Length: 147
Image 1 (cartoon, rainbow, N blue to C red):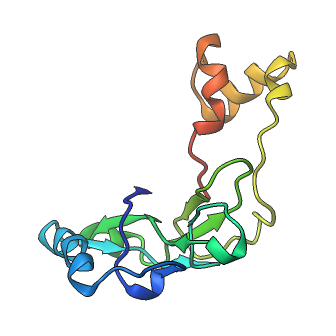
Image 2: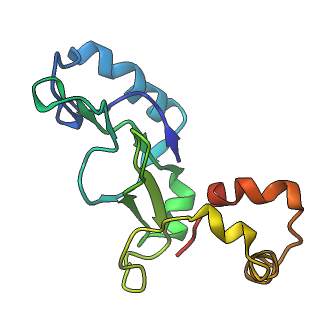
């Protein structure tokens, strides 16, 4: 999963000048050459916006999750969900290994004040099953979420 700064189809971008068909082929060839599949995506189709007014607004699906065929056969019900992130022009992606988000009804929001709570570090260590070094605490919001 990453920001590939590329689209596969013209309908993955809205606003301003759309890419010519030949410009899309490089990314398509990359996926074909590496035998990668674009995993199923659910939700609003665009993962990036330029944060401009509606007259100059550009939306695109630049972020995606890719997998090799073998992996996708191991997890046939996997689904990529677009989450809302405050303060970023990209939306976070959540990869669920089954297609249900029944227990995940709202977007995760990290409050930096949690780090200051005495019970925070032990809770993270118990939940992740690993020791958390104090120098890593500011990076905790980057820890991947799993369904």
